[in-house]
Image (cartoon, rainbow, N blue to C red):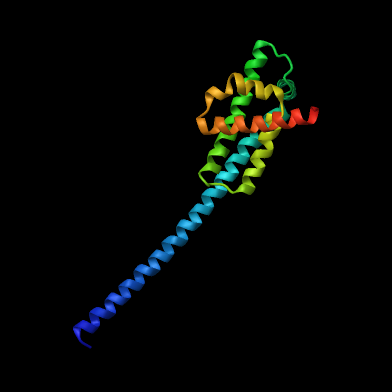
Length: 162
């Protein structure tokens, strides 16, 4: 075998090594992306679950949330507590919306978040909080999204009462 033939064989083996390395790297990246998606889903589910657990554990907190959501009159301390509950929930919704915009969650996953969001937005007290306070706490894309969701709800409610 000549030196040229040996060099050709060595180059071929090196090229195959690079290809195998790239396939391995692509597999690792794919697996890491899947693991990150699972971790993000578990983290967001835990956030919502912890929030609900707090209301289950404290009946007065649940009462405050129900009255605030309906738009009932709250005293000053209750208004601040309810406002903080809304803020915490909307941070969660904002994070989920960001993940959707960044294509880090599927439409099927978004359906779960949107169902909870719709339940919140169905409450007139939550919509009032959004109009008076919430809109100033979030970025433009999320504000536009929530404003659009509220417009759909109020339009549907107006149609239902007509």
